[in-house]
Amino acid sequence: MTKNYDAIVIGAGQNGLTCACYLARAGLSVLVLEQYSAIGGMTISEELTLPGFQSDVHASGYQLANISPVPAELDLAGHGVELIEPERVYAHAFPDGRAIVVERDLDRTIAALAPWSRRDAAACRRLFELFGQEKANLVNSMFSAPPSFAATAQTLASTPGGMARERFSLQSVRSWANETFETEAVRSLFGAFGLFVGSAPDDAGGAEIAWLFGALLQQTGNNLVRGGMHQVSRALARVLGKHGGEIRTSAAVDRILVDNNRGTGVRIATGEEIGARQIVVSCADPNQLVNRFLGAEVVGKEIADAMASYEWGDASMAMYVALDRPVEFAGGNELRQAAHVHLSPPSIGAMAEAMNQCRAGDLPNAPLIVAWNESTIDSSRAPEGKALMKFVVLGTPWKISGDATGKISSRDWDCAKEPYAAHLLELIERDYLPGLRRQILKCVVHSPVDMNRKLSSAVKGTISHGAMPPYQKGSMRPVPGLGQYRTPVTNVYLGDSGCHPGAGVSMAPGHNAAKAILSDLKLG
Ligand SMILES: Cc1cc2nc3c(=O)[nH]c(=O)nc-3n(C[C@H](O)[C@H](O)[C@H](O)COP(=O)(O)OP(=O)(O)OC[C@H]3O[C@@H](n4cnc5c(N)ncnc54)[C@H](O)[C@@H]3O)c2cc1C
Image (cartoon, rainbow, N blue to C red):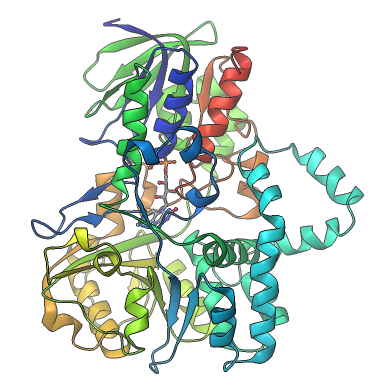
């Protein structure tokens, strides 16, 4: 062993860094090992297009983080995180030039929804306000270990309204949206959020997620971090450093060393072995933990088999666009001031059709695109007078077997990504952002394959370390047997977003894993 630490954390994403901070704060000597050349995982910002244009490579919106206790507990504001809080939180633009804009001001939001449907506007008010009533319970459940399946069932059966809540948690977006709203426009406004975590309109479990995101953002904001999302992981690294923790980048872990059912350290790709006196935490992704770091012989057949059936979800693609000047939306200037804008027809059916194409292996003709107004919200992201946008395409196949656009012959992402991006940019320009292509100084496309190449935790080009259907949530996330941040190896833990409560920049899995560890070590 070259060196020994009390704790080794694998992966310097926001969850790995969060977990490391809590362990170091409790007095443990901590080393974080990161395979990429920089810390941050899916919270990195880079000059991907041109010098001076700072793109968020993955996450842009500081959303779940708004209800996380971690930023305050670790004083991220005091370590470099400055939030920009746009009044217009999100919008949905439709191809006919109309749009819905959701603002922090609830009355203005409801007034804007009323012309679409007074009934839907009233339903939205109820749903947004419901989030406020449920917030404390939600925060508590996100930032605690998930209850066991049996305990959940018992609580549901004995709580008034419990079974109705359970029904809602299993409902698909289409089922819930049809019974809740009368217009396709408002159904789509919420339905788009299901796709943020790979829930297509007919997938069980999508409704709750769609409501949660749609209402959370209205109630608590859709903030950008000044200078880019990377400031979050950099702030966590500063906190860690203050408590004596260390980080090594370009250090991919190959194996967790196990002796007598105890983790004793790790071996990195160069062959170097580093000792862990007390614990090892995997914050990479669940598949690597099971099949690379420990192996089926260590975790046992049940967990290995469950991981073989683990569902990763649908892949995504991103287009990073440096612009000569800001571009107007066809739906009006207001849309440029929203942190992000969903681009799709006002139709749950159209979203479902695009997802069906994706799951059949076809390049979808008109997938849901999320346009991030990075530089209009944060002027530090682009040189003066210029602009920067990011288009995230939700629901693309990992392996291409067909093409619903009728334009692309290649079935290999490396050859197909530019023509597919050209098709999407043409569609965006035609329906939502007139004149877009004339203003593009440079566009960089990351296909699902590029995403996975850049970050091994973007498994098969996915964004959430595993899909989030009802059978991969709570104590069943990632798989039964690993659902409490603990593994069959006594002192080996997991704390990435493949654990409860799942994807998003919440810092929750890392926080919860640290709580479990400190409790086991009798330090918490
Ligand atoms: C395109 C995109 C857009 C998104 N937009 C948003 C958004 O707007 N808002 C939001 O809240 N969330 C968003 N998300 C989701 C969010 O970014 C992730 O859910 C979250 O950041 C994951 O954090 P994590 O720490 O669990 O994992 P990761 O960030 O994936 O970190 C895991 C780390 O482990 C490292 N690693 C992997 N294998 C090894 C190894 N063998 N050895 C050492 N290190 C290893 C990886 O390099 C990585 O740094 C987005 C994601 C993507 C991809």
